[in-house]
Length: 391
Ligand SMILES: *Cc1c(COP(=O)(O)O)cnc(C)c1O
Image (cartoon, rainbow, N blue to C red):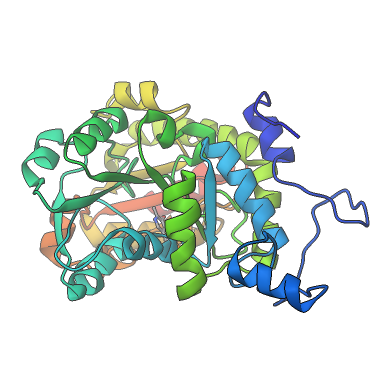
């Protein structure tokens, strides 16, 4: 079936499904480690790649394929490789495109574990890593070297919602014969499609909004047939950071409501951010939907919405931030985000605690900073819960 004329919401519900002989309506889960061949000759042809088809679930599995095809359709990519986590998606990209002697540039406000992966582990293998300010194109330009093979950016960033102009960065990166990888975790394809803006590869933590209900860990890499369908897939089949069929099924169901959920998260976050800005106990609110956000216009141009993450600095530093967090009864104290349940986090002592104080300072993670992933509860209950800890 040709889906090229389907709109986003239709693709989110319909793309990628192939019914089995049982004619099931909802996508089937295939919990099998291997697949059976009709003859020795067929087995040989499958193993050599001469005949397409399933061999072993480390490589391909029908439920995982449904998820991959659906996410590829939503991102506007030719190929998708699902992985066991968001971090393993990033690792698979590194293993596919970098070798000793290469150079990687990464924005300095990425997910804390991404910084640790690049700095503590990737550098061990003779790959140089530079960190630059996400929004500063001049800094990206200045960091370019003849051996720069990969540029990695997370936009908008966590937890401060800083952005980069993806199209402008893609142009710059391509002038230097390098690849641009965008971590699209916070916007999801419902709000931003980096491949259409010139990025070469998109990575996801499916754990967050793609699932949307905090149930499973997973990730994905999306891009063209050659780089993702061949190069990243080649890493996956040998290194084995495979997504389980059950988790793939959870993410498939998540994608079906992605558009609706993202609209609701955006609406709630906007209202919460505007309200927080009026409270005297709060020093500063970080949300790209506010006109006070320095990159509000770029966000409005580049994204179909401002997302569900609101961060703010409370007056009184870490003690005041911890007090606020400890007084909540509704919000969950957990580092996960992108859930229907609102979550509250103190980035400096949790998600960003493995960074050095200098790295935290560069990333703008102050001691009074609190991050809320705004869920789908009634907004007035969320507000009441926050007020309790500010009094
Ligand atoms: C959570 C997260 C990751 C890592 O994903 P896991 O599924 O936890 O491995 C990567 N990037 C961003 C932006 C994230 O929020």
